[in-house]
Amino acid sequence: MNDIAEQYIKLVLKLGLYDADYVDAYYGPEEWKPKGNGGAKKDAFPAAEFKTEVGRLKSLLSQYSPGERESLRRNSMSKQLVAVEAKIDMLAGKKYTFDEESSLLYDAVAPTYSEAHFRGLLTELGSLVPGSGEVSARLERYKQNFVISKDKLDAVFKAAIVEGRRRTLEHIPLPKNERFTVEFVNNKPWSGYNWYKGDSFSVIQVNTDLPIFIDRAVDLACHEGYPGHHVYNLLMEKNLFRQRGWMEFSVYPLFSPQSLIAEGSANFGIEVALPGKERVQFESKTLFPLAGFDPDRADEYYTIQEVKGKLDNAGNEAARNYLDGRWKEREAAEWLVTYALYSPERAAQRVKFIEKYRSYVINYNLGQEMVRGYVERRGGTADQSARRWKVFEELLSEPHTPGDLLA
Image (cartoon, rainbow, N blue to C red):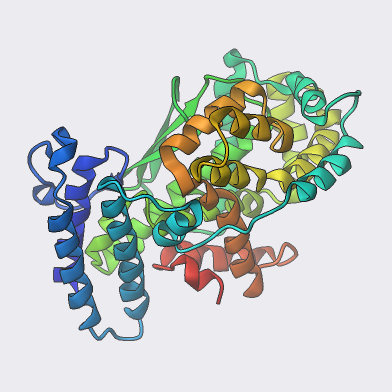
C-alpha cells in the first residue's frame, strides 16, 4: 500500500504544478517533489497522461486487500482519486454543474433551499434586530458597534486562541512542540487561512481587508487553530503519517473529500470548544472588555448571531446559481446581501471567493452539519461534553470520508 501511496503523492504534487492552490500542505520527502514549472503553458497540460496514471492507481488499489484497520485507508484514497480525476478534467476544460462538481471533489451534495425558506428566517431575525427597514441594512448598522479596532485586534485574537487551546488540551493531548504564528494580511478572497507546515507547526493568517466583528475572534481562533485546522492537521500527521507510516497523509490536496472533513470539523469545533452559554460567558468576561465593548451586550449579540447562523446555506444558493450560469455576478452579490446578510463589500469579496474556489463553499456549512450529525449519533451531544470531545478527536485522527459521516 505504501508503494501506491508514494505514486499517489507524486501524482498530486505534479498536478499541483498546474494549479497553485491545489496542494494545501506537504511535509513528506523533499525528493518526491517534482522538478520544473509544469504549469507554464496551459495548452501543454498533459491531461491524458494524468488520467492514465489515475486509472493505473485505481487498478492497483482495487487489487489491494486491506486488513480491518486499513479498510478506511483504502476507502479514503479511493475517494481522493475520484477527486484527482475530476480536477484533471476541470483543468483540461471540462465543465461540471455545481452539484456534479461537489459530488466528485467532495463526495457530497448540498441540499437546495427555496427563497421562501430564507424569507422566513429573515422574518425571525427581523424581530430581534433593532431599527426599521431592510434586515440586512439594520443588521449591518447594529454590527458596526462591534467592530474590533485594528489596535486591539491582536490582543483579542490571541486571547481567543489561548482559550481555545486551553480547552482543547483538557481533552486532546497535543505534541509538546506544537506551535503557530499569527499574521495579519490584506488582499485575500478569504477571511482567515491556516497554512500547515508540518512538524506540528502552522501559520495562521487573518485578512484585515474588511472590518472584523467580535464574533470572528473566536470563530477564526477555533476554526483555524484549536480545535480546528491546526489540531486536525497535526493529529493526521502524528497518528497517520508518523505513527502508522501512511505516507499519503503527508500531502493535502485542497480540492478533495478531505476538505469537507477539515472545514466541517473546524466549524463544528467552535461549538465543541465553546458551546452556547460558555462562549457568551467567556466573551463577556474577556473578549468584550479587551475590545472595549459593553460586556452586558454579549448575550443580546449572540442571540442575534444564533438566528443569523441559520442563513448560512444562502451562500450555497448564490454559488450554485452563479456557477451554473443562471445569475450574473451582480445578482449573486445582491442575493448574499439580502439573504446571507453580507455588507455589499463583504458580498463582493465572497463572490470572488466563489469564483476562485467554486463548490468548495459547501464544505463549511454542509460539512459542519455532517460532522455534527456524525458526532451526535455516537453520543457526542451538547450535554455529553467528554463524549463529544472523544468522538471529535477520533474523527480527526482517522481517514474518514464524507460518506462515512452519514453512517
